[in-house]
Length: 176
Image (cartoon, rainbow, N blue to C red; front, side):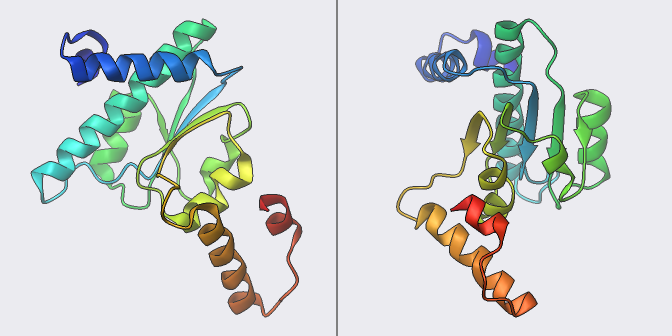
């Protein structure tokens, strides 16, 4: 799939390459690539396995393009609670990334990160992407869903229910 993205004459693949080139050209100083919410590889439905393959290929293709731009290796970190041994083996030993458990990805996610999160929940979005404000984020569509407002509201409601504290903390103020 990576080879198809990079070399296919198919008009759809050319559009994807143009998209990758446009977003990479707009970036400045990427030093890590973090993939959150990729999903399981060995799913019971073939379409889910194909989605994993295509999402992973897109992440790797963008990272490789960023590496060419910056002329340096950009380390990859993967996090998803649904990863099992096969995904961990594939991502660490074959792909060459590092698999971490929540919330470890935050250690690698900075304002100089490329974050790819195709299936990240809104709660996860609020506690990772909004918190770290990466240089490049590709993931869930924020339109027509309440966007960041829903994520912020859920974060506040969770805080109130779990702690009884109605005061917005510095984390929530920072997100807002």
